[in-house]
Image 1 (cartoon, rainbow, N blue to C red):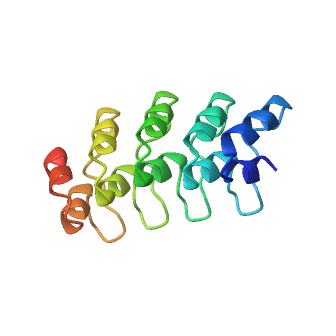
Image 2: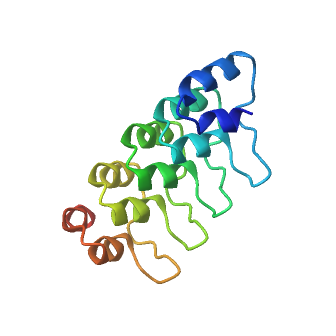
Image 3: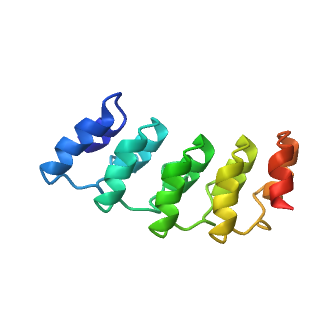
Length: 151
């Protein structure tokens, strides 16, 4: 029930109410999705912050292998990215295609997130399954400002 609340338009209020009733922030549905992953996918930044404060698993993976940091990086959710980094989310985990949070943020042109990930120690030299680095991906996506950050 908590993961459903996290992806609704009123996610933060519903999540707050359920967490107040001792709902487990680490619970996952049958596909492995957690309330935190759902909140980030739905753009429910406040709900994501509440779940992080209640011990949501940082590096749990979605069915596609994405972590909360990957999803927030791709979606441009800088505040959530900062919160995940501060709590110790692993920056260099890879999804099923070999993409890291840095690669996903680079492709989407989220310079602030690219900078935050680099400052957190993300490895700009890692390659995905297509043998592309974050700078290769940014370049191919036409993200010239991000290319400069990655050099």
